[in-house]
Image 1 (tube, protein in one colour):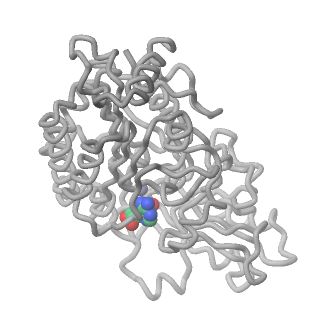
Image 2 (cartoon, rainbow, N blue to C red; image 1 turned 30 degrees about the vertical axis):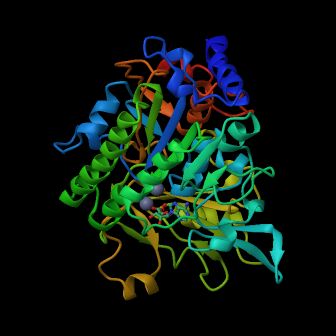
Length: 418
Ligand code: AMP
Ligand code: ZN
Ligand code: ZN
């Protein structure tokens, strides 16, 4: 298997060194393994594992699922966008790659005497390579002579290990979806086309947050991302590239309904003037100076629907302890429950509403999708479950790349690849 996968990479290197036409033009469709494979990795943010089972207009997603459809893609904990996108492309758990949350602080790096801060709206932090560890797949690819292009992916806007994707764009949530696809297709038309391309679409996550996972607006968002995938598939077909392209469609997590009736107040368990709280579906607590973390843990755990841990005592299956950026106390909430404060609830009596994610990754509602179709993938494969950290090794295998050390299961590729 390994030798077969490396062969196309060698052929491509020879072809491009000789200045020939792109390897795809020389490929024989009868022998797809002889073509230099191109892989397009698409993220549909917040696309829950079971959304495709709904009565929803999604012909292109169903066509891709005719190749491989894992029953579920289990996200890493916490089931948030940035930790998971970066685990998908590094094969590492957040404690190893450093993106332990959408919002983080780094007590080991002070800025004006305060821990450095990271959040999704902080463009400067997102473009600061010091937050991003491990080796994302586009770095693995570029280092081994396989050009990469990213139409958005967390981590793609900075040099990591001194390497950037050869082509990339700064994240712009307002960029029309058709333009994202057309940008990727234009790159593939260039003389030195990328052989690894990423695309990212946020509509399904947006609708899930705003209206909740069961809302008709989520169905509409699924149909919308499906139609943009149809544009991608049509564009590849028109270029004669469809048969040499492996499409991989993943999501970073699922979605569960929130309710103002499922809130637990932390005011009496903490001193909110002293203890610092990272609010969310999973809560982080940085106990204030002189405060006893064990006492904090005991008081929070005495509340219904919440279980607090010192991070080193979290269940090992969460792989969430070994980073100074992980808060000393981590609070797991029951599925659909949220911790809050009296002040917040007084200001926002109708919240939380809609949907959320970020809970323990053992909840099925947090599980995402893995779909794949193309010459490298089996047809009609239905593996039970894959892990987010398996995706890096699978993509590296398709592209004939030597993977960096990672936490993926080496047997995952065998479940999905020809
Ligand atoms: P979450 O809060 O975990 O639901 O995050 C989803 C949000 O992440 C999306 O709605 C985007 O606004 C944001 N996002 C996704 N990718 C990026 C990126 N590459 N850079 C900045 N923000 C992003
Ligand atoms: Zn997300
Ligand atoms: Zn989200």
